[in-house]
Length: 102
Image (cartoon, rainbow, N blue to C red; front, side, top):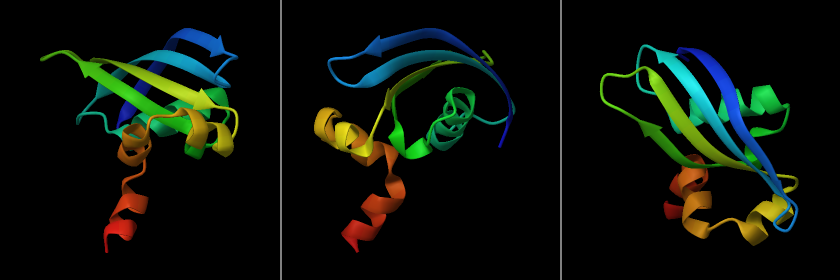
């Protein structure tokens, strides 16, 4: 994993969808940030399980070390499956989709 600094810019609790909508700014040294690294850092900062996090978007600009990550943190696996978009669930769990395709 790369050396990272993270700052949570926005933490909105969406009670209707039983989730927190997070915007975090990460400063990355080294290689490009992966979804797995972003997920691990957000989980560590918020003290939640990685399975409850859906990374919506990772934005970076050319030549910059700052990355903005938008993520949803659900309060349970059931709420994640009920409220998250199916393509985002698939994108955030590549290991499970590989197993299903075989």
